[in-house]
Structures are given as C-alpha cells and as structure tokens.
Length: 464
Image (cartoon, rainbow, N blue to C red; front, side, top):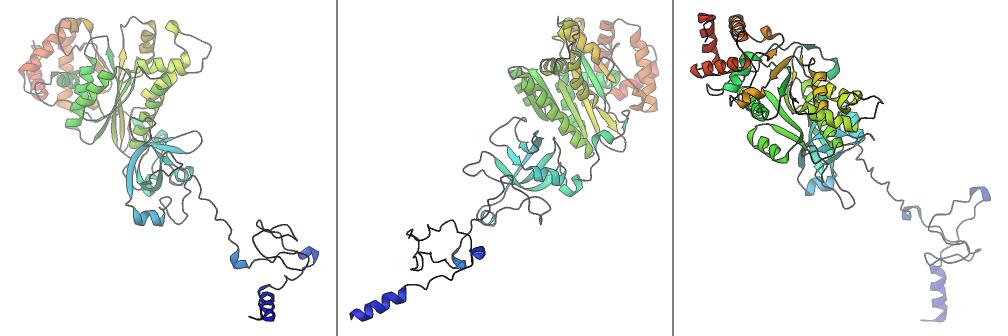
C-alpha cells in the first residue's frame, strides 16, 4: 500500500474536535474524564487544546439506585412488597407464620419458637407494620424470602393473613381497651368423665366462666401442677373453640417438658435459669397475643404458673421507686403483674380472655405473702388448696369451704343453682377436711354432676 494511502486512512480515523462552548455553557466533567490536555487511556484527545472527545449520550451508564434495605412496599400492592420476578419464577413461594414483636425502632420480627430470638425469625419492615396496622402479638402468615449473603434473617415479602383473617379485615378490628367488659355468663364445663373428680369439684364449688379471673392459692406440694393439667385438658376436650395457652414463669425445665407432653395446647416458658428480663418479655408477648385474638372475637384461656414468680421478676427489673414493702418488694413492681392479671375479662358481644393463675403461699417468704395479699381481691374466682388435706392424701386437696366464684348464679341454670346453694349449706357445717372428704366420696358414687345435684335437691340436708 502506498504511503499516501496510509496517511489518508489515519487522518480519517481521527475524530473531529468537539464543538466549543461559551464558558457559562461548558458541560460538567463526568466522573470518568481525564485531565484536560492529557490522554487518560480511556479515549482519544483532540489536537485542539488537548480537549477530550465527549462520549455519546447512549454510552453513559448511571448506576441504578440500591434497593431499600427494609423491603419497602410496592404502592401498587395492597399486601406488601412483591417478590422479585426472577426469584418468583425460579423458586417456589415460601410461606411462614410467626407472632409479631415490634421493637422500639419501629420494625419487628415474627417469632417462631417460644417467642425467643433465633435465626428462623422473619424481619418485618416498618412500612408493612404501618400499612396494615400491625401490633405486637399479631399472628402473621405471609410469603417470605430466605436471607441473602449479607443478611441474617428471612424477609417478609407479602402478608397473607393476620390472626387468621385477611389484612383488610384485620385493619377494621376494634382496640382491646375500647371493648366493654362484663361478668362471665358462659361456663367452661370441665367435667369429662365420672372419674375426673378434680374437674367435677371445680364445676360445683368454684365454676370457671369465659372471661374469669381466677386464682389458685397453692401451698407447696398441694398438687397445683396436677390441677393445672386437669383444667387444661378438660378445656381442650369440652371446648374446642377455645384457644389455650399455658405460660410457665421461672419453672424447672423438667416440669416444662412434663406439661408440654401432657397438655394439648400452646406452652410458652421461661425457666428459672433465664434472666428476669426474659420472664417479663415472654409474659408481655403472651398477653399481647391473647389480646389480639380477643380483638378478633376469639375465646382465649391463659394458664399462668405462677403469678408470684412473675411478680418476683418484675421486682428485679422495675426501676426502683425509693419505697420498699415488707419482704423487699418494691410497690412499683406489682403494676405489670396486675396489668397482666387484670386483662382477663368477658367482652360484650363476643370474645373473652380467661386467666387462671396460681399464687404461692406458705413458702416461708414474706415477699410471697405480700404478693398474695396484693392480688387477693383482684380475682373473681378463688380455688384454695390445703396442705393439711394433702397431708391426709386426699386429692384433689381443695378446701371446698373457702373456694368460691363471684356471681356464680350467672353460670348455672335455675335448678342447678338451687342445688349448688344447698350443697354449700351442707358443707359449711363441717370442718374443711371432713367437707372435702365427704364431697369426694359422694361424687365417686354418682355418674355425673347432674345426677349428683338431683340427689342433693331430693335429699336436702341428708347428703351425708
């Protein structure tokens, strides 16, 4: 090829110089531009003052904005952020459920196991909580995605249900504090078979209604755990519509295992080897979950063992008020346990929260006695266990003379309440041990409480 032809080709390859701009119209330098007048290895420079040739507009690639770390919801979706198209096409949807715990920063987690923090928790963005009006204690079911390389938790992509209903229905629910409490007027029948004497005595002496606030006064070794298991199993057998939760605070681990294997219901625990702060957090979560279910019109029963240990944990975690009662109890420590116990109520026009709690007495601790005195007048049903009766090996060791329920006439029909009153009159003339022994013997001779009350009505005072 001739030398003239080579020079012609090289001149054609050099682009024309960029047009000059007035000083006030000079375009801003892009991040990848080199120093004017010098080649930076990324493009040619013109012979006109060393100005670099500007790339075409189509060649500029601006970085995409990063995805929000809190999975901000898509405005076009009324149930939360949609899954990424690539992920939804390649992988099947993962559906998980948990109980929401909202943290002070506004976002929360769906807890999946005993309300403890774990790697299986599901992150819930603050935007989702605000959009659906979610509260601590809500049972949320939804589509989730697994954690990515730099993440630790699953992320909630789409809310499917809240407490068993659609998110739209859940937003219309009433506030628990605005619901009207009334006396319990529907009895939780515990009697299951003739041999279940414990349940039959409770039905006759201290009946439990939906919305009851009941205390089981329990000295050591009087059989409170057995009575709690009997109540729990009787409720699940006779009232499948009731949601049962058992809360064990400061208990022995082996006792937790025993109750989990014996009770057909949800068992939540915080054992004695855990911090008092965890006792209070777990109790608050159980209470909030129960309130959310009542707002949805459900009947909920919470069995608490024990109210005394919950108060002890509150005493260790509360900010000191500067005052101290006998036994070292801070007066401010009783507020949170009272709020827990006082939440039990029967709701007008549907829903109820029944709390049956044990209170420890005769433990040798002055603090335990003070705690019981604080709660003595707050319940509307009291079942008292007696150590002397237990020492006689009479079980259930229930003091039938000192156990009772307020407004019990609302829980019986007219004929039954007359027979129950007659039974109380007969038992009042005996000492506690003889009264309990007589009632146990007569119940073993009858097939049901209904037959027993008919016998009481016919014989009058001649029950014995």
